[in-house]
Image (cartoon, rainbow, N blue to C red):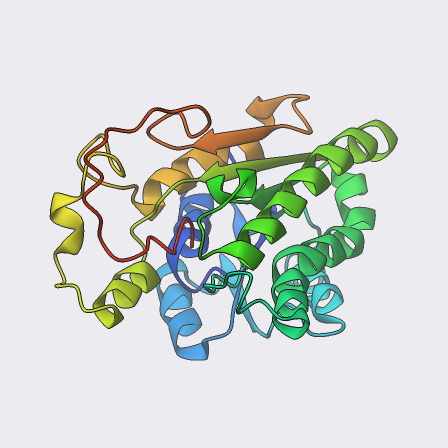
Length: 270
């Protein structure tokens, strides 16, 4: 068991990547705090994990004090805290015309400010256990799609946060901070989004190779499998690193001219 007896907060873990990470953490011996907005979905995850292995907290991660409440429930329930996975995020389309100040600030509060707040709240406990933080970013951090302006900027900021704190917190507190940037993932919400865009339910079965050289996109469980290395002690002293989980070289790639498209791939994670 690679995470035996570790206590881990996984934000945004009632669906998608976060849910897959929480399930995999428990299978590796950890206790987890499940978090999200949907009580019914959270209770479904809890039924899979069991009350001995998990506790549920439903709250908007951007609420004032939400970070402190998440840390408190972890420590009160399990007695310590070993790791934080900052996965919760708002994935909303926007461009320069539709990204007004209020919308931009909303995305940054959820996707960037909230992760910082949770790291700050967790740090006293992570320092005691020489624990770690894993931030879940996106390959869109490097520039982003035309219709993902605010989201992409938030993930770029998260990447800088991970590198900065990965240095300072490791040296000063013994706490590792790393980030993984998933590519396009087949989550429940991505399936729903494509249904709302008018695609059939099997839209992902025949994607253009420019988007999916392997003939398919990622499953949440594959991202979860990658996350375990960064949460486990086998990661050793590695800190301040950003790892892209994508099936093609995202920077500098030379896609084929035949870019037959499907409606906007707005979800590069979650």
